[in-house]
Amino acid sequence: MNDEPKTPAELREIRLSRKAAQNAEGIKAMADIAAADIAIRKRTADLRALRLAKEAADRENPPEPKVKAKAKPKKKKTS
Image 1 (cartoon, rainbow, N blue to C red):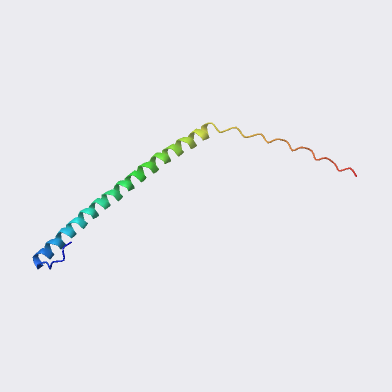
Image 2 (image 1 turned 90 degrees about the horizontal axis):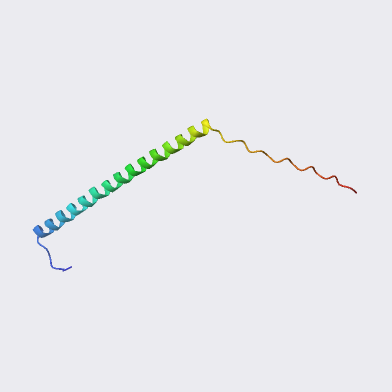
């Protein structure tokens, strides 16, 4: 950067260009946030549909209950 003093017109132009760049960056950032939000909502809807389909299938064909193994009889202590 050169350290020469700028005229008021040049300073005004620098401020305007900086504000325009910040405005463009802000618009791009908001678009990125909106796109991420849409992607999250779509993924959530897909996962919800899969979960509901699995729950419906489980209601129609419930899994067989697991058979618990019988407990072994305890040995009596002999003294």
